[in-house]
Image 1 (cartoon, each protein chain N blue to C red):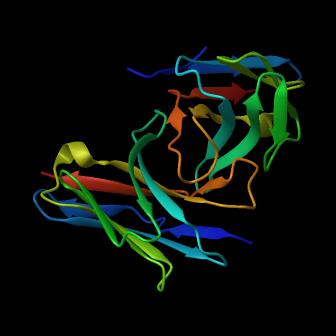
Image 2: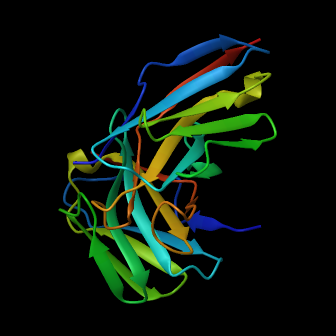
Amino acid sequence: DVKVTQSSRYLVKRTGEKVFLECVQDMDHENMFWYRQDPGLGLRLIYFSYDVKMKEKGDIPEGYSVSREKKERFSLILESASTNQTSMYLCASSLNVGGAYEQYFGPGTRLTVT
Amino acid sequence: SQKIEQNSEALNIQEGKTATLTCNYTNYSPAYLQWYRQDPGRGPVFLLLIRENEKEKRKERLKVTFDTTLKQSLFHITASQPADSATYLCALDAYSSASKIIFGSGTRLSIRP
C-alpha cells in the first residue's frame, strides 16, 4: 500500500518561530509537492521538487523554503512563522508531473501560529 | 489565466439518488482531468482520470464526463450513500503551474439517510 506520511497532524507554534514540516514517501517517486489549503482558496502550490536537491517555486513561495536531501523526504520550512501561515499543509508525491499523473497525498498537518 | 470553478455551495441530496458535481474551466484546453475525494482533516485521495478524447469514464458507482466544447466535467455518484459524504476536488493539467496541475477548491457533498 503506497504511503505518504507527514511528521505531525497538528502543530501549534508562536509567531517568529522556525517551523519544520517533514514528508516521507515510500513509492520511489521523483516528484514531491507542498501545498497549503485554505477555505475557499483550494490547494495552492508552495514548492515542488523534481529530484534530490532540485526545487521549483510554486504559486505562493514567499515565507517558505524547502529541502530535499534524500529522494523519499521533502521538508517545508517556515523561516519565521506568522499568523497568516496558519493553514492546512499537504504534502504529495507523483511519478511525473502534469494532469496525466495522479498525486498521492499525505494526511496533512494543521498548523496554527499564535 | 487558467481557471477552474467548482460550485462552492454544498450539495445535499437524499440517499439513493444520483449526486452530480460540476467542474468548469476557462481560458485553456486541458488534456487530462482528475477527480479526488477529500474527507475532513485528511488529504485528497485520487478517484478517476479522464483524457480529452474520452467522453466518459466509469468506476463502480462513479462516472465522469469531459465535455471539451462546454469546458466542463461532470462527476456523478449513483445510488449515493451517506459514506459518500466528502469534498470532491477536480484537477486539470495546467502549463501555468510549476507542477503542471491545478486544483479546484472543491464541492462539499452531503448525503442524508
